[in-house]
Image 1 (cartoon, rainbow, N blue to C red):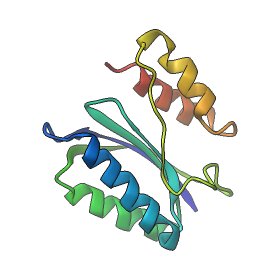
Image 2 (cartoon, rainbow, N blue to C red; image 1 turned 60 degrees about the horizontal axis):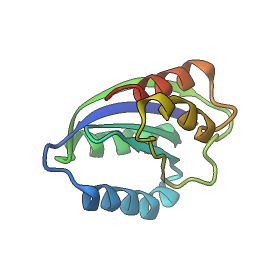
Image 3 (cartoon, rainbow, N blue to C red; image 1 turned 135 degrees about the vertical axis):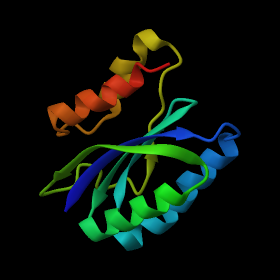
Image 4 (tube, rainbow, N blue to C red; image 1 turned 90 degrees about the vertical axis):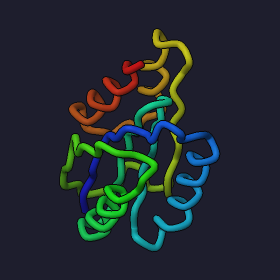
Length: 130
């Protein structure tokens, strides 16, 4: 099993309906693929952490690369894992606080406790982007 974190840039015309559609499709399709994880959207960029079998994640990333709702997909982390950290999240949306001053702390509380320190830091750095 693997854990993968990527970032991408949202299409300029992306709206809240598009975000809801992404989350709904992920929640519907991920269980049969053995994928769990979360999505963060800051208004311009996505950060997503996904976990699952390598072949499922490879297929997911191929789909994401072709998705016109975003571009510039960059893998930040890809690590082997022995157990899921997002076991109950078929695709959870983690929200960023409006205030830049409180974003990092509130996101840190929402992240899985056992998340590797390096991966946690990568995700928290994303929270500081404006």
